[in-house]
Length: 448
Image 1 (cartoon, rainbow, N blue to C red):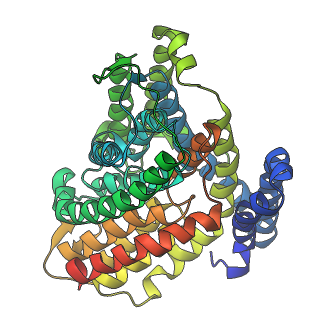
Image 2: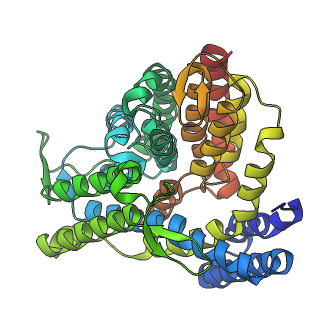
């Protein structure tokens, strides 16, 4: 079905509301965010039904919620619960040097437990260590840059687009080829961060702000570390969901994935159901086996996950026409070089779900008829081309708050814990001035 560009108006309208209402009507937006999301969601459903019929509208909505939004929010919910049951205490104060180390650890951890898992695990210690500081929004901005996005490039577990590539025949450990790109970005961004944070740190000290240290020796302790077992459970569930569809036991005779039939004719695959069940079980066991005092120390509330759940169901629904338009026209964009793929994939991943965006450009690259490169289920793709698409999808999700799942969660949790985060456009001012020059340098070094 051909999708006209005007059907993307609800998506653009929702993005403008997210960007502008917190600036000009913050209190109103806080009370009525759900209503605004609902109105734009209904608008896109009505428009879709009027254009293609009620049956197509039902199928699109049900498929979006069951196959995209459900696994997205359940994963976020599970990681939020499990990470909220791990508490850090200690006399380690947030200084530029300490923060660089924390960001570096979180960045490397993202490829092991995913950008969402690493973000949820690291955010509370980072906020606690810097609780004494006044100027600290830059810490969480670079946290989003590195931990919530760029760090997830080394394995399919790191970020969903790479998992999608693994399901299409890209070898599991192929992503380790991105290590040089990751190191260059880490060095550049951590160096920039150090000097920005040092200036803010010195300003805080000049105003008489000092960390409340109870001892001259550093003491660090963790509570609820057994929850790492449940974190591994969640990681295993995600890996299974990407691996099981390729097994004969989970395939119909036509090669499609077995599952539960949904209204409209789509299917909720058994691999996704298994993933959801494992994640929910991990969250349940985490709460049952952890003293509530740990959550009290973490200032654990449901506010952040509720806000993300409400906002992103609207984003997932309203962006469907944009994704369909991209799938329909992606092959006609004339993209034939790695640098074109890098910036095109990245630009769209900044605002759309980076997983289908990655898949569109991966499919486009596989159809270009290359004779040498990596053999995948979608065709032969040169290594540099695949590297460019992968880096564009993973890295440039950091350009906006909605570019990757944990970005808005980090913002919401930071606001909730007294860190004054910039607005939608305020954040983009940071990303444009810092990330875009770094990405241009990436292109010059690796993709031309």
